[in-house]
Image 1 (cartoon, helix red, strand yellow):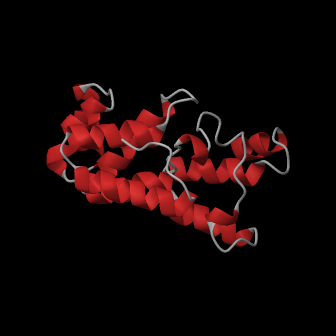
Image 2 (cartoon, one colour):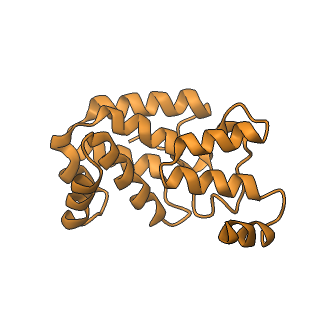
Length: 164
């Protein structure tokens, strides 16, 4: 409790909830995040305004940013046989990918989500996530998912920056 009080006292009043939501999502504490949202009068965590503080390295949607929900969309479509090759095509080491698989699956979707989160955190702000992931999907022969992702992204953001 002391840790949370100290943290809260060192944060701007208007930044506390978005930062807390980001931290809870990263730790996969989704029920707790929902409870916190409801306690503060939000119907869901999407209503909590994102800020530069809780999204420091992620480019804007116009730059091909893929949010957590976008990563879940992709992860739901991939299967276990693609995990290692897909991760290598994203630039991850085989031992890292094996770690995601052993620590976060089953279900394999959890391993993919963790892999995407780790990958995204390492990217520079100018990296177009959509382009990189669609290229990796091409390399593992998952054109079906690539096309679905491009359509999904275009519907969600109204444009597609990374036609591959």
